[in-house]
Image: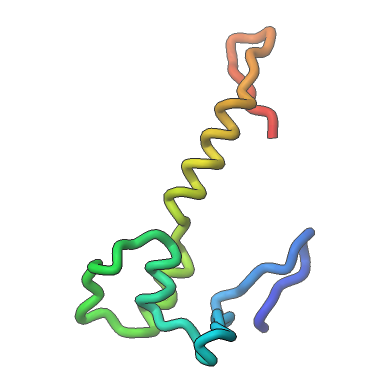
Amino acid sequence: EQFRSDGDLPTITTSSELYSLRLGRKFEPRELFILMGFPSTYDFEGVERSSLIRLVGNTMHVGIVGSVIGVLLSLRIKTNSTVDAIVV
């Protein structure tokens, strides 16, 4: 199954692969890691291709995570209790 549609948006599953129309081929694991913010010099020597694909599927781009946290912190409000709440 390539996509799950049991939520609001389709989700890419672990059996999904990204395809570059411009390059006319699937992205290589190294290219996927670069898209996720890893430096191009990061060393993946000795790691099998299937393991790399599984690992990149469990990553989150640091820039995106930072932006989300920034938005959440900017929406932070103080409630009447002693606990802070975040509006999402």
